[in-house]
Figure 1 (tube, rainbow, N blue to C red):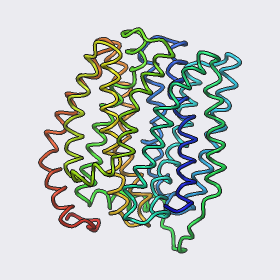
Figure 2: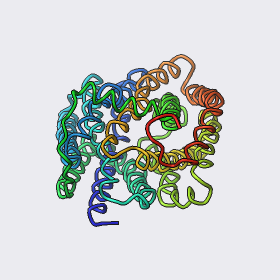
Figure 3: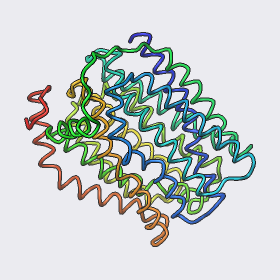
Figure 4: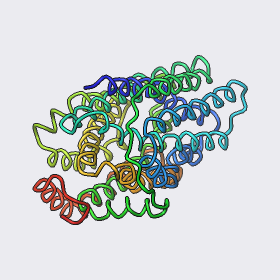
Length: 404
């Protein structure tokens, strides 16, 4: 791996630690304001709403402008937002509406950063190294976001409610400084079509590729179901299973072990069993795991199932991200990635809100089994198309943007 890749890797790791602390602290902060599952789930919905509203124009920006510049500026903006949150929390001026606005602002930065980060990896490493590079990125992101960050965030929250937000602001600032040192890739000057046509080109390419189109639809259903369950996880853990703030952070860290193992060994696992088998195994196993999470009798069982889920999700990401980077032309990668993510992540806010309503109406355990059943129905419906698309794609690994 070139040195520039490792600077990208370190930036991802540093910002992920802060994000993990933030991810643990925000629901704990929301619970101190209200115990109603509906506003708690609305915070999660607000954080992901920008993927529905802003992902497509962000993809055009990623293809037209310097990707490194977009990344560090997005991180700097997020540092400013979280810094303001830390000050407001310290002064005792936080409310659910303020949390919602801040979550939306951070989500908007994440849209730009996320699309640019996925598109910049092929600019730095060669195609044979993509699985390894994406595996390393998944591993360091998991270590920070799910393994190191949550217990640090929960412990800091107990010590002082503003501390985890201050840590996140510092991590964003350090990440932005590192990203600013990455080399820029000069793009050939071309006549830029209007934004609407540029967006349509990315959507048309994605819709014309059977495999990526099918995966995007499946991701949309699965992320809807994932957040239908996870939006009220903090309430399931703290109210039903009686965990305190410190133990909740430890639960999230324990759950991250699976993601970490997949990030470290996922590329080798894919090479051994094949990408096609890996994708189908992930989709099938997660149906059972989600039903089990809702029925967990204690925190240990819940943590084990969350860890298995993390392993499978990370394995899925390694395969599908590498697949997009290999198949999509470089000049379209930002737009196709943004269209894919809009389809895949655009339903997350609805899933989070639906999870809050289900938990409020039927109890805190209800969202996960419902999510598992919905994922099973989606898999059975899409399986014939997915198997056919996978067979055709592996027969012709670099297809154009039309039906294989």
